Image 1 (cartoon, helix red, strand yellow):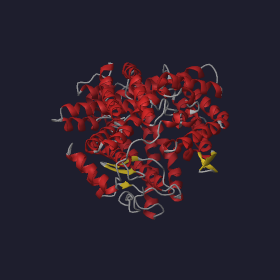
Image 2 (tube, one colour):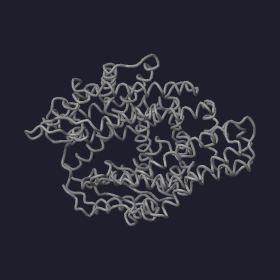
Image 3 (spheres, rainbow, N blue to C red):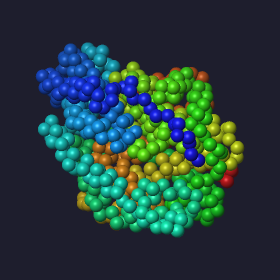
Length: 594
């Protein structure tokens, strides 16, 4: 179902001049020169590990300059990221983004020095003497912990540079190698050579025989590439293990929990509740098998289409529906959507050279840009609402500094999940029976991936880190661990003979040294967002104001502290079970419709 070629493109002209314009070149040169000047200021003020107190005047000067320069450079970073995402063939923008990388690396090192400076000083005295310090109390208290987990300045500097030829290079190898894989596949009686991304997209095709052939061809292609991909996996996990140990972390997992503003009891409470929900998801998978006329669901049936999509969701229909239901929740949410549509914040047109998927990029203050590849379906509308939820989150943080708005990924999905659920519930209520099945399937498909599949990914990564402390793992061992993760999570909800042993090769999340365990934060985000929505559904009176206050502080407090403001205890499985009950409710509806 094609959408007319009148879908909007975003407007970036109000952000910065066009790349290549002399005015842009001058501004770019000034911004990168300011990074160098900031480094000199850090040297002059002795910013780094300190055994004494910091004068409030010196702190205020250093913090103020850091915030100013980091914010200015971020605007160039966001602008260039938007340009290259909208058109990867924009060579001038790509060149400028590459030229910006040294400044971004320098700012990262300066922020590490700032954390070490603050964290090794008398924080309580500084908080008492400086208003700027009190406004950034969360950053200061986090810095105390970070300072305890830093190597010497020379070692940290060496590590920052070696990572570029270590995990960063292996990550790039994975990205380049997998993007070049071409898979021979029979389609409509003709053998075609298709990129891996196109083959994997066939998992959503209505023809089961084609889905099976695509799955089998995919397995063969991954098997052929498994040796270099296993080398990349082993090298990255080995580097992360070494640096975590040298920095005094119990494990890479402990380091990520700190970065995500969580603790071990919260993670354990969530994973306990998640494991308890597996039988409910198995019921969903068996119900989907019945709906498809199958004895059991195979791996290649997970994303098979089901139900009637209920007609076209044109962009204008999606806009009207989103504005209507956003307006029922909050004036700020409605105003965000209206501004996004009216002020050309959205680039919705699929086209060659544009990256796939969707994202929301904060630009400045409360202003964002949303990239989507809009399709005129319920899913297209839901994705748009999700990304506008991120823009709404950015609006709530408009007055925060760039350090105050640094939100961990566990909390970054809070508003987007909430907004997606808001329009999803409304669409379900307005739909007929056949379309309701399609809407429920869309929700449960995502929930199953974020709860069940990610639980398996989390277990797999734990096992790899543990075993990698002793030696490298062979491709066969990695496949064996992946199959065991599927057995423990999908269980008999799927035909075990069709589990996917090469999901460790598929997912790029495993190949980042700087973002290990890029899995459980997704589960946290979904369940935290659903839990808050459940509270709203029980009592909406005054909820929006409290919720927007929470969103404004997601970079200024731990998840447990933010939840406590709503009377929630994240360290007991009860909260997580209540969130999962919302999914169970939809599974029951799905079974009834099937």
